[in-house]
Length: 232
Length: 232
Image (cartoon, rainbow over all chains, first blue to last red; front, side):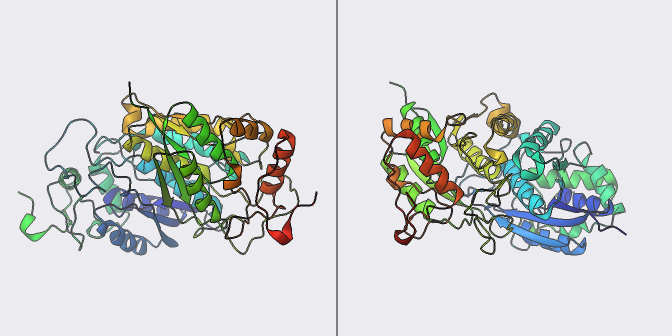
């Protein structure tokens, strides 16, 4: 029996990346989960990622730190900028400059060390916030880059970037995860979760997530902040 | 009179990146120098980068830390792997997985925050160690990615990746830098420089550098380790 192939899975601790890890595992990969602590406000994400990695039996869970907060430019990393609680048009202020490019670059480095040719990322271009680095054209461009960027790539072992959720609705993602045994109660999607990982129920990410549970017909297992529970 | 446009310049503290900073400055850019401390053995590079940034009047010099040593995979970050002192064929063990991809990603993030559309990187595909991420095809692929990766990019302000040295010989680079007033005595290229930034004179990087000074007909201002001075 051959050894399972290794894959690096970017794991934020949110709903999408947890589902992505479950998919990679179901496809038979030995999963190496990578979380990036970039100075985000919602640091409860990292604790959630560790719990999800454990529950879904990742071989290893690595947290890499990059100080994106030092350069600012996003409501997610700059405490002087408010996270919006009503829908906005265009790319919102919660966009973090070049975040997914940085995360995929770190995943690419680890994949090469692990001799892995598969990276999974939970980007989604349907029920999402409009970020440019969640779209199919971005993933395709990164795959092109990866083939030219690494020793493995130029030697013929280019990395494939898997975005299995890219064309799924939030409801479809949740249905897939439920089938694969994801415990969404462990995940944190809220942009302003408290230290215990409890969600605000009001930010863009909370709204998209709650609508997904409703559309999937699945009870919402999100832990909300007591005084801030969502309106029915 | 209009304000000079900002540019992010990747500055390792070595000869090529110092020359690149001098070129960006000569082109009239307000230069924001970025050094990445990725756990490299030759940490004297970072001190050299600070001195070069000061000498060439960068507006700001930022050091970002990423723990690539934690994942290993290179003689530059893994103390159990030796830096070779004789020429090798193929891509050498000093290759750091996805290093330039990670550095350019960080530069891209800072550029977007600075509202800059210009990134300079001192890659060189002539007198170099054979790294895949120093080639024109890599730079072109990163530029393609950048146009899809950021808010600025998709809104029509894509970043240009300048690699002004990519087709130059080491001698040409040195001649350009001398003309632009670069003090190469401040720079450190050695893969195993000591804490004072003095070069071993034997590694791949030292050999390429010394041959460049010879070919340019310029006195070699490199500070070598006393007992380890290069053979004539």
